[in-house]
Image 1 (cartoon, rainbow, N blue to C red):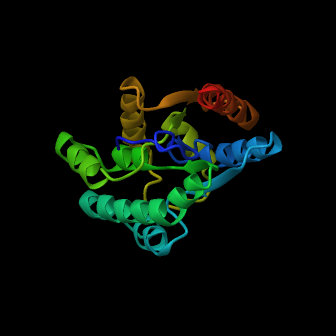
Image 2 (tube, one colour):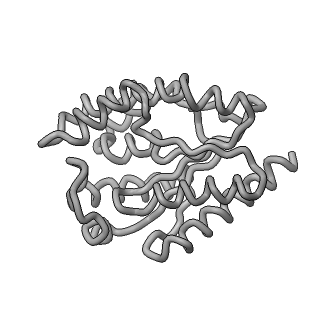
Length: 208
């Protein structure tokens, strides 16, 4: 993940991350709507993708009765990501659009890169992924996930899994890979905070 979309003179690639129940999907959709209202050509997308491999992830990995081995999870997510990049993200960026992606590589690092060896391997199998121009993490404690999610949709939605994922996300924040936003506030406040980060980036980006 060395070259960003801006390095190639294309559109802008933004991803929004967070544990389950953090409000990232709502925030991502609101941000896209706000960008469009300001006159930007913005598009919402998500992982797992809507493609063939994304459907496999949803039906076989996330909606199963128990978690698969993390190695297998990481491989399937990486395959879907590459398919997503080639068939949706790259074409939209080449058209000069702003892509706002709900989950991306940072999710694989948080949920499957749980040891030094696994982390190195997850990064290796995702080495062809485009680096986002801006990556944002919405932070909430796992207790919030328990309160917000009324019906379990994924085998990942357990307190222990989300606790470990949050720790991995916060490590990526400390490493400077993700910008952090407080998520234990209203939906409007989360969307506004993310909007400010994006606006600041776009001002600097288009100024150059």
